[in-house]
Image (cartoon, rainbow, N blue to C red):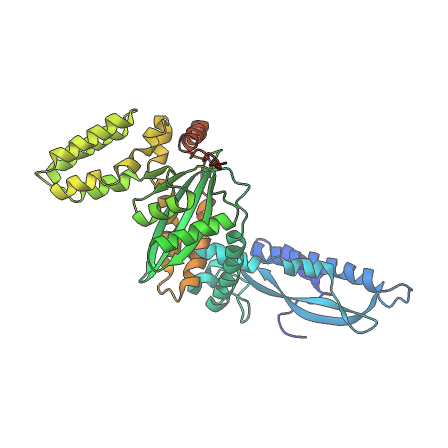
Length: 423
């Protein structure tokens, strides 16, 4: 018998000994009791398949074939356990249902993924799941090495990413979609999309890689969303950070009248960074006054006056203020209430998710390829989704739905009259 393997016959005495020493090691008691329970279940399964020991009853499916060593996931690693073997009359192995169920639970992969998502490095994985001074040491082959943890993370993150990227989107009642990119490495940018449904619930939608945040990459992301069930004929509000490639691809895919809101925070930051400090306060106040107005025409007039005042002091900034003016005031033109405009006039929702991606990926020192970046980023997006809350102004979303319907009806192209055929 191999050293360290739990003997089936000694399980009861082991439990009693562990109970007597429960004050010294509660962890040992938990392991021993768990092994005892699983051993008893496997013995019952063997008895159902083979009958009682040394019995000769008819109708048996197989016969006992000794015992063998096996390993089971525990505390992010593995523990050794002995299990009975059962064979059919033709010599093929019979699987014990209890052992199969215990093996089916991928606890090791879940431990690895959970710890790596909270920034535990693979080098410290063994210490995170086993106490160095504990009485259940991580022996050789326990599955807590850095390479074993990395392999389990790669396998589980790949599987979950494939499932997520194949999710059907047709059942989501999306009213708002935000798109933004995150720079991973040189010549590697990932473009992500997040949606908000009619109840204010946020959903990570998709992810795609590209060399830069260009129109082709954006188009590929939008095509992927449509292939998975996103209806391109439904009017939705798109929120972007000001990239012309995003606007171009969105209007090409969903129509040239699709409402697009440019992030006001990004716009204000870009303007102020180019101005001397003594102008920051007045320009920031003017922009805030314009964005809080209820009339889009008055807001546009105020911004044009601001650009006119800056023509002498900063002519380049003056032109920058007027660039994308239509898209800066989209939420005002839709007639949305102030509480809803505050949430939908910027890309804070997707920026928050990007912050989670950067936090999760900060332990990665070298990106080997795009597939690695996709796996990590997809895992981080799903991790961020666990902390998503409903939109603050979700009770006002029916106003947005009505505004989008009215906008679509106002810009729907009338059907062409059939040409009369000359007699």
